[in-house]
Image (cartoon, rainbow, N blue to C red; front, side, top):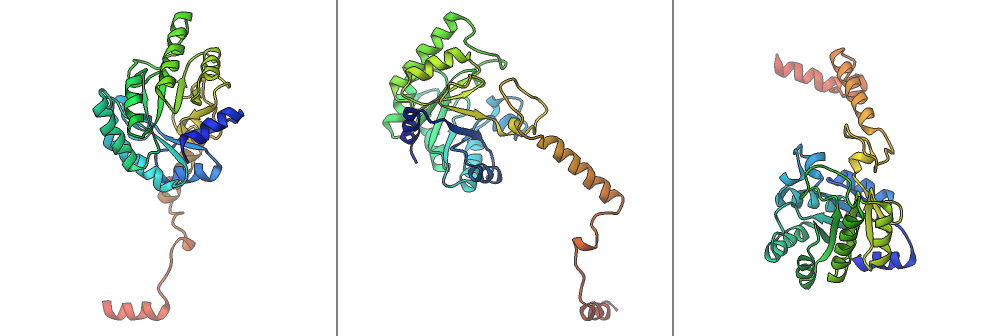
Length: 269
């Protein structure tokens, strides 16, 4: 599958579903559930690797997790993030994109309005997802963007420039829904919204947020299941059973057959 498939969906007015994954089991479940695109974001740093910021994520980290997701979901379109400071020049962006493509990414994503980087990647045959609005790699704090007419107009101009450069997708994060609608209407490329309203061509969430595996909740998120609470309760129950001798029980193990046990006793004696 190529990016053009999603452009055709946009033309037909069909929404599509994007969700993050960082490991093979999660990717497999998402594929089975019908997710259209899996995004291996630099959010792996704060959600899985224990980093304080997305800026700490390395190219090795991204390649490692992209490969794991690809093994779990071999047939799903996969977008992989270029991490911080790995696309500061055209040559660097191309080398970084090659690494992620080798790991299994169908498309590479980077933050910021850099049409020259888009054009360089497209010339070498890469499919490209851009990302504007909240840029976790480049902005301090996770705050809503485009809140004034001037800031909104700048984001619209950036989106149009990226589209003209050939971007295949555009992530719009934490921008006003009205602005996201205007951008979506004007772009050839499908838009993927997160905290940007319902008029985007697709939506993306971080799977850890959707499943409530973290301690924080966000206005742009909806918790579809409380996996964090369920896992905590399960681990606590396991710990109690071990300490009180209830686990493992008879059914959780096996025994030697009588003849083998007798033979063992003779050997030991």
